[in-house]
Image (cartoon, rainbow, N blue to C red; front, side, top):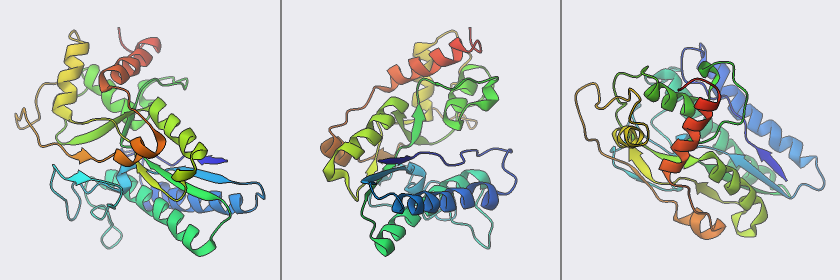
Length: 265
C-alpha cells in the first residue's frame, strides 16, 4: 500500500511563483508517485490526499453561491489561472488549483495506464487537531492550524468571512487507512469532513471554549452572520463507516498543542 500525503501548502507571502512552487510539484509529484508504484510488483492500493480545494468554487473568476451544497461530483473551476495569472488572492487560488490538477492527473493516469493497483482520493477541507511535529515558532505551523492560532493570539482583528468544512486530523488519517482496507473504496473519491461552519460560528465556539482569549467577534464590515456551505459526506460514512470528531473536541486538542509549545498561556 502507498499513501501519498504531501503537497506544498503555503498560501501566504512565502510563495513568490505559484506555478513553480505550488502547481508543478503537486501535479508532477503525484504523477511521479504513481509511476513509482507501477514498478512495485506487489503494490495493491494507492491512497492519495487530495483536498476540498479541488472541489470548492468560492471566490475566483466564477464563484458559486456561498451556501452551495458540494459533493464528490463537483470540481474546482473558479481557481483556474487566466493568461497564467491566478485570481486574487493569488496564492490561495494557486494552492486550490494545484490540488485540482494533481487529482485530475491521478484519474487521467488511471484511465490511461490501467495500473494493477486501485486508487482512492480523500478530499478533506480544513484539517485541525493535535500537531505532532516539533516547531520552533508559530510561523512554522501548517496553514489551517495557523489560522486558529492567529484567532486566539490577538493577531486577527476581524473574523474571516465565509465558511468551510472542518475535520480532525485523526479522522483524516483513519479515512486513509480505512480506504486501504476497504475493497469498496477502490476507484472512489471521498469528501472527508465533519460539520460545516461559518468562521463567525467558529469564532463563537472558540470564545465559549477559551473565554479569556482575544478572539474577534465580527467580520471587517461588522457582519455577525454569514451563509454557510454544506458538504455531502454520506458516501464516506457509508463505505468506510467513518464517524467524525466534534469540532469542539478538535479545537481543544489543537489549542492544547499551542499550549504545549509554550505559545499560549
